[in-house]
Amino acid sequence: MRQTLALFVDAYRELNAKKMFWLVMILSGLVVAVFAAVGINERGIQILFWTLDTEFLSTKAMTKEFFYKQVLFVGLGIGFWLTWVAAILALVSTSGMIPDFVSGGAIELTLSKPIGRARLFLTKYVTGLVFVALQVAVFSVACVLVFGLRANYWEPRILLAIPIVVLFYSYLYSVCALVGLLSRSALTALLVTVLFWFVVFLFNAADAGLLSEKLRHEQMAIQRETRVEAIDTQIGLLKDRQANETTDDGRDAMQGRIDRRVGDRDQEAEKAASARNAMNAWGAWHHRVYMAKTILPKTGETTSLLGRYLISAEEEQEHLEAAQDLVEDRDQPDEREPDEVPPVNRRDAERDSAQDMQTEFRERSLWWIIGTSLIFEFVVLGIATFIFARRDF
Image (cartoon, rainbow, N blue to C red; front, side):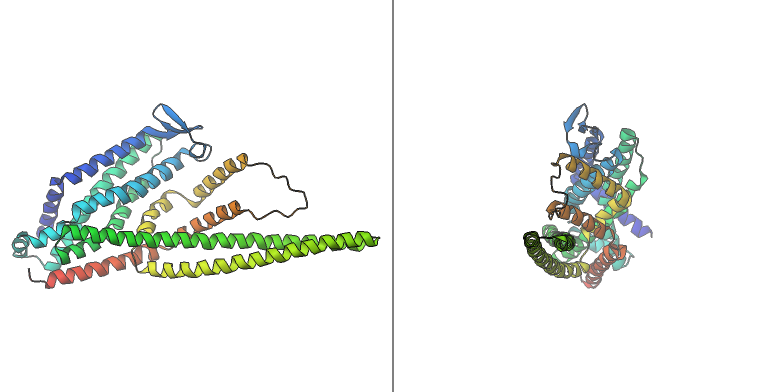
């Protein structure tokens, strides 16, 4: 235990000596300072004493708590800063830890100490995560204080960002450690890890895009099927009116209207079937991508867990409804005839499919998100540990 603690202390000293560690810390402080200067009011975003008129980022569309949680912390703090910019800087700083350790003369001295090789490698790996853990801890605690003092919004669940972001980074760092061990090059380890991260990003984008198309076509099919039912109802009413007509001209005119509505119904039924076929095609491709993602680490889904725990489904629904009310207030009034069947509305289909997509992502299980990702990480670490234990340095 004493040897392991000594390795942790040495790793901390190594990180502390790197300028990148303090650069990221300073930048994190600047991001928090920006958060402290930003707020919202009825007109829009307030930056210190100035207000930008942004109707959809105002108290008309969301509460102050939702703005700080979703827009600032989850959207910008986690979604942009910690899991992109800071993560890349962390990889730059830590990618050389394993290569420098195994390529220099330090490993011979370390191996001469009474410590197992497996424990030595895993301890070195965990110390690489200390960089991110310290950064996220400082950033999260500062955000709790800023949001509390700025908006009287005290939310300790923000600290969940520490284990979640460290877990996200560990997926990438396991690949970085394995490649660094094999290549003994920090640059190679960094480039391969970024390339792997890009592949995972492509799968995430394909998952979201294919699912969006599937759900959009599903909503379009539902709208057209509803329209078919409405036209069928109209046809029935027209037939009743035709039966009550007393003149041949009246019945012929009514028959013409019926024939036109039957033609409309057949067209809508064909379009509904086409939308269903498109939905099934998009769904088949989405299923393939989803299955492929199962064996990969879920970087996007892991970091989105923070939003799931910070923001309830009810809060998200309230925000969507408030935003929709603002959109409808801008629209022109509906001038259809009372008995006219409403047309297919692509915007409504996209809105409903976005809600369905949000729900589906929320309902993905922790086992699929974290469990399968940890299996991937354990396999990669197992391979790296085995090679380290067997290699003759």
